Image (tube, rainbow, N blue to C red; front, top):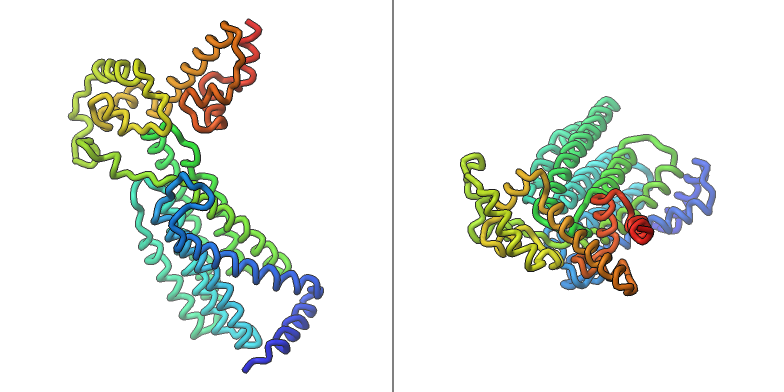
Length: 385
């Protein structure tokens, strides 16, 4: 049996040797315990709870929930085996230390990659290449366990940094492609874009890599890393619970030409016919006011498929998102002018909702992109005329 009080006293004395005060040591234990317990609770929540506690009207992607739960579980396990390492070693045993660092890198890097990739729903991106890419790192770390040499550690550290840079570059292009896919298929982009979550998570991943391979003072190494974990936990839970499940399969059903190997250049698209159908079945019926209207739904409503509709917008030099937003903003302007002329009270938020927007912030951004003015400035200028 281990005398845990003796171990704790030994740990405190060692931290005092490194210049840490008792208060800093206590804070370390508090942070370490909390940052180990919180992800465990989050993992159970994502795996066991069927409903959505934060956004009940949203159904997140099941794959994202599972990968995020795996990441939270990996974080908890990381806390556990570092604690066990110290308890059973009474010191940082070189071989055990190398093993724990290797476990940390493989589990955390893989689950972070899986979580980030599952946020992009334009297509299913496999995670196995990340696992394959980790094989040389595991091999180098295995050699380091047998032959402790700083040169092997430096090579392994450089390789992990190289993988991070490579993965980051890939994610930049993948997120841009995902953004174009959203613009081509969805008019309502509220909580669908993921670039902020990707950026913060990649930043946390870089910090973790530096934490694992760099020699940093105790205070900076421990406190900064654990505080960053809280940011990551909160961001991921928010992202998982607010990201709607977007099913690409539904966008290729019902005779859609996508995914059937059609030659885009070989298809002759009657632009005038598509324009007439849009005017008849979208503009005249005010279908654009429907919340969360997708390009597939619009294509079905006008009697065509998403391929022809996408080609029509592409040849007009716009996206589906731009087309719907233009109609909605025109609707807002028209209703505002009618209300102003009649002397009726005007509530911009309500008018934006009536124009097809769930979120006023989304409307404000689209309005400024279209007119070059904020909603408030435009209404003020219009009133002065």
